[in-house]
Length: 109
Figure (cartoon, helix red, strand yellow):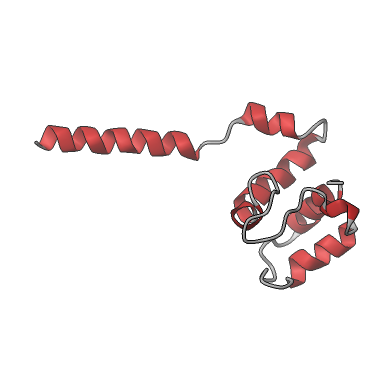
């Protein structure tokens, strides 16, 4: 019985560990030549924003951001990130990361 339980726990741990890792090949393909800044911005977005705005910017609790750059400038996006808007709290991202993500999102048109 203990062996079965240990096997179940080990198997579950392996599955969960595999789910947590990103696929760098796919991440790099999403950049479309955007370089390290785009990759860094996308990683920050995935860690801090994707739970509300979706892994592919499709929107969930927060709005769809797939074409946010055609609606807002980099500076406007930066201000929304820093000050919040509607149900989005202020300061979800801080420091230089705000500029990276704002620039990356502004390119989404």
